[in-house]
Amino acid sequence: MCGIAGELRLDDQRPDPAVIQKMTATLARRGPDAEGTWFDGPVAFGHRRLAIIDLSLASAQPMVDEAAGLALIFNGTIYNYPGLRAELIGKGHRFKSDGDTEVLLRAWAEWGEDCVEHLDGAFAFALWDRSRGRLFLARDRLGIKPLYYNLTGAYLRFASTTQALLAAGGVDTAIDPVALHHHFTLHAVVPAPYTLLAGVRKVAPATTLSFDRAGQMTERRYWRLAAQRPERAMTEAEWQAAIHDALSVAVQKRLAVADVKVGVLLSGGLDSSLLVALLAEQGARDLMTFSVGFEDQPEEAGNEFEYSDAVAAHFGTRHHQYRIANGEVLRRLPEAVDNMAEPMVGQDAVAFYLLAEQVSKTVKVVQSGQGADEVFGGYFWYPQMRAETEGAAVERFRRHYFDRDHAEYLTTVMPVYHGPDHTAATVAARLAEPLADEFIDQVLRLDATLLITDDPVKRVDNMTMAWGLEARVPFLDRQVVELAARMPPELKLASGGKHILKLIARGRLPDAVIDRKKGYFPMPALKYVRGDFLEFMRAILDSRACRERGLFRRDYVAKLLAEPERHHTRIQGSKLWHLALLELWLQRNVDGV
Image 1 (cartoon, rainbow, N blue to C red):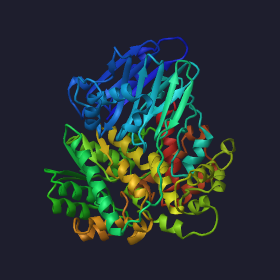
Image 2: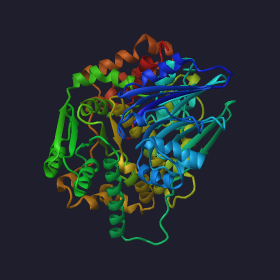
Image 3: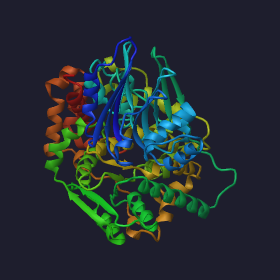
Image 4: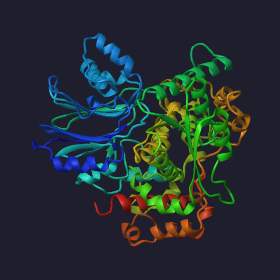
């Protein structure tokens, strides 16, 4: 994992080394081990390295093949690179390194733009092909690795974070009304290519962008997820065996494809506990696990240590447990916001940030359970949606997921940001895409290919990479996701959700972990807003910067501040926190740029 940045000039000028240095410097926390730059005519690349595979200088980036006229910067991991390397050697390619970066470079030389279809992994990369005069950008199928860009008449700039583009200057920082609508109605999910800033766009998952020297862009989506039953019906036992085998392969390759130690973020829930069980089942030795907890509120416990401790004891892991006081959370919260490429309202963002800080002192790579709920139907709203029989698909979805309906959105922001119901249009179009057998298949596919990318996956990447820690997500392995998408919904939604995972876990995990009530990463102080946290949010929303920005309707702000614990979204997020987080992000990342 790394941080990448670069520029393609479109105005017959040469890239300014100072601009590249500014962008690369902002990515230092993503890649603390080394940095490099490269310039060739209208193109410049910058790279910050987190060395995980082939720790030698042979895999340093930017990686350049002068003879072939190719240069590459790459963020991520290609899990099938050993097999691809052998295949490419068989086709006559020669290698100077033992890592996955050069495999990617040779894959382009062999297959061109089709190289992405050969890759199994999490990746975002940029490749300059001098002979073709083209800059090629690509992002993995499920959007695990981020890639943002800023396209003007003079240049194309791209980077792993929004902050890198802002550091380069010249970004239109006006609020994009389409993105704003999604942000406040879809749990801060802003689908690509949009971001909240008009001048910043992002590459969509499973998508490549190719730019010529004039800046003409060609976009291609190279993968789609089918959610249809297989031709031959499978029994529950067959599905259980198939999912078990696919998950076993997923955790094993995320352990094996690294030249450094790999740990596990162990929350105490079914998902992360099952990762530990599968790794132990395959003979993994000296497993290191990590858990974090916070202060309780009367309504909700701030930790799940009773479960994570039980799993760690059951498998004899080297367990690390961290307790963080609310005062520390509040003190460090602005720092976490500084490392959000986009505003993220998930209450566990700061939790991951503080956990990653501690974990990074011990390991450079961890496996994490993100994606299991979306892929295997673990959330409480899925059965509610499935039980709906009235209205179009988007209405059945909206009633149980949207943070605000369109009418409330219009009372949230000032009239200059009003417009049509953008979110409903997006969700309706994505649900209606072909290759899904029934409504809940459409919903789970939407989650796996859109919602998860710009909520939990982005959150985990940003908060861990802020400490030079790579988080790998086996439940979002391509083969696991494709297999699960074809599974009958009842094998997901039964048993209170994640039925098939519970079957796999039975006998491998303590029953108390399997049969417990569904939990969420606990950060109660950002859900039940009171005391110092309330005053913190009040100060942000009453600040001069917020008032002069003219984004929120003041009567709506006043209503939330008057009764902060009464105003929650359908999936139990604090509406007050949504407003305060966005304003804080703008103040710390955009104001003064």
